[in-house]
Image (cartoon, rainbow, N blue to C red; front, side, top):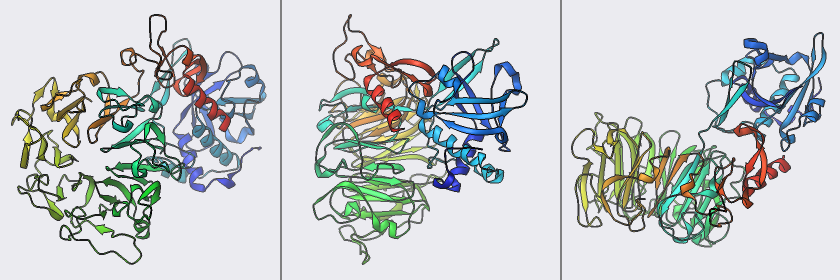
Length: 636
């Protein structure tokens, strides 16, 4: 057998994971001896002896190639079949298997992968199989285990499904769970990401992040960050103190990917406060940056940290952190054992280490700053921070709070500051907690029965009106609702709420039916109702009712959400998303088949085959997507 790759650069784990991926099957574009290339579902057999694919001509048995019959692996499009039916733009993702067929002689199986990660997976797998790999036990052990990413397999939630017709024709449909981002509210220093400082009174799509498949967002009073499924981190807004992580103090009015040192790293979690940000890697490492101080977990002589830097004190403790949360001047890190660590200032006891509020905990000789362990016997699965207070939640739905309490935001029926986590007795196992959120000085709790509870300052309660939302204060948790188990509100059943989020002085909730409700202060239009009127009762965000909202995020005075990807509706774009020229009766709208954005004819004059979307023939794409697609080919 001949192969142009070598297993020397791949670990045994890479090989096993890649082969396990092939045994689960994937859709590739197959070039045939007649007709145009067509999509087929390929799968490696469980015994690792053959590669089979669907073939309408051969019925249920399909077609196959035995590994033992493969004589050569040829990269690119360098066979007679490929020369007759080339797939332009995908030469670097193509390969051919030259194999022997009894009674026929030598033939070739010519396929094109839809993306680079898929191509790499096939190369690693075929190289190992053609060189005798046969460890089925190791491969079977991988089944049922979710690997978010590895060297050869990256997270990819979209796929192609093939349905054969009675006459042998095939219809290809795309299964896509990728997400776009909408932002609205205060636009100061570009923290909405739309290229200007204008406030947006209703959700507006963040077109620079189209096709990035954003899986998580984090918002603060001054800037925003986003995480893609590929582990890329983007930031935009105020760059003061270097809090955007780009190595300078510049404001960014459009999302920009953070390069050094996060490029190529596997980021799994992001968080940010007013002055700093933190990310967690798949390895459990934590990186922070922004305004200098104990909040970063290390000291910085320049008064700022403009590039992400690892918190070495956590690394020395060999912790595997899974989640972080940033307050005003402190940071929390939750590890895989459910233990919470904290570092920063302790004016109100927000470190939760048992020290009296206003006192500084001791630090170890090797540490720049004190790394504390939050004093509690609760095994946490989630932790959130406000400006100076925090909440934790256990798997069984128990919650505890600590930190600043003078607004009643801790929910213990008083206004005391707490230096250690105290369980909130109001909530019982009869109605366990499902989700928690912190505003600047108020807290929001969602229970399994769909009830929302809230306590603290700058908030309002469903079903009751308060003349001045800014002054209203609740010391003990107050039920959000009218006392009924289910409250009907504009066709939204509150018992189906699945997520809550809090901003500085407003709140929001997301229902199982993927509708958004908001309430609270609205001076910058952060509630999204096309005005700046305060709302004491939750109102459905009408402009999002036709979209599938997946997650919801609140910042200081702005909001964001992730929405299942789809074409941008015509009504949401009056100008080209690239050149910003206005549309008229003559200058028409055109959708890019790649990102779904709306552009003018000049900005969508290029065509490209989009195999990952089911388009084997070239289709219209915008100039931005065309450049990226070409760059991917060149880099490959």
